[in-house]
Length: 115
Image 1 (cartoon, rainbow, N blue to C red):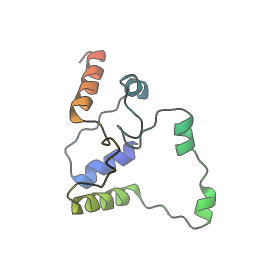
Image 2: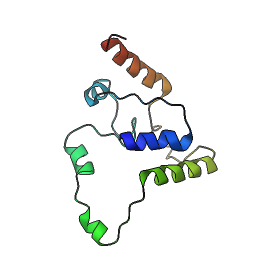
Image 3: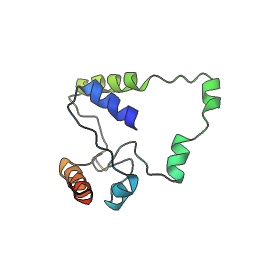
């Protein structure tokens, strides 16, 4: 996750500061895996199925993986070409945490850490 998010910050030339929060804190705050925090799944069977699957057969058959930095940069270029609006289904909720929700979660973490 760290490598993906660092690639996102670099590709977008963002001044975002990444803040790491324990998975149980996110779960306790009711953060919905994958939808409110894309590509995040808390530890457990789903996480293991996604991240520990044996993909050797796919690579043996010719699958090639690009460096994450290249994938993120190309995705950012594409997203800019559609004015930052990736098409989404109207019957689905927006993806990602709102800025207010993110701030509230991080404020709670800061209070718990005595900040």
